View 1: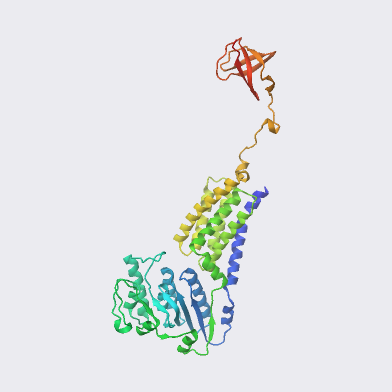
View 2: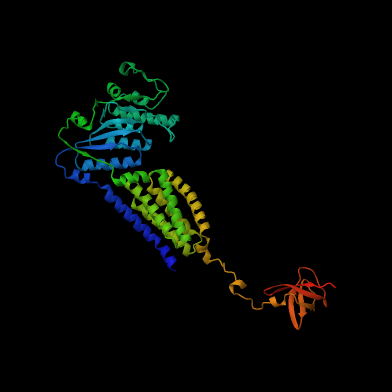
Length: 457
């Protein structure tokens, strides 16, 4: 009974774990800079780094940083860009967010603004580049780094880049040349070389300034501030919090799938093989980390956590309350809905769940095989053998008849009755028929079974 009670308690434990991690996220996400900015007297310049892969974690961080800048009534934002790019969908969202924000923004290219990084820079009000930095090479590539040749994809991204460049008065054809290898562009009179077919345009700091893709060249953020005419303003540097850095790692598709595998396998193993404790704890922590990462990244809300907990509860109830699978189906649907709603990309989350289910089934099968004698199925299977060695005896054990001879008083076909001494004994043969008044000998006696054979004279 204690084991059943302990398994029933996993649902509230899961809820408490999720609430604890979400609360912890809130504590970590509020850095000291936010309080400092809120109490700052006079205008300030916010310096925000863009020095990581362009993905959902960066998008969440920038939204949080700009919110702090707005609350502090910052006069200007400087994005320090040094990235090799990332996901187009996130770059597009970030670019639109910067473009529509009311705080003036300057992109300071400190090293490389490649691919998605270029798009982000083009949506800023100004672009300032550090000597030796580059901007461009914004062609769309797949996960392996190979160029995507789909005309629709190229056309879409080219138009997005060109539109962003045009909004700031920059030459749209140059933006197109940074995306489409089929574009040719005469630039020899400006930068000493033309953009040829098959190439993807990349500009150095000096070249970008010559073609109007950079307004200034500066060696540091201080020089950028001076060029903007904001000398004397307080500079507030916003860095990703500990939770944001952790979330960046946790929402990685590979890590996310591993967490789901451990979560599903841990919970199911704890239900099937009670008494360990560790699988249940690992399962709850894995699911907790999954929701923690997505909550910090700004994707998961309490509704996804509630759906997940309801799903776990229904699956546990299904073990005790026969419902012809209805509770199990509802629980599985609720659990999957909670996981999918918490993710940035529902399709990616669904694929991760499918992979996680396969991986979890393998882990569960291995664990169950190694712990056959501890599973709950043992409660429904009689495994004890009532053998003589264990002290169990039949009501009428006839081992003492072994080797004795008697006379058949009925035909043995192959069962019948023989007279041994003064006792009538029910016997069988090994398959042969024996007529009446024939001599037989007991050749085997097992429990109540007595096997005889005719004595041939």
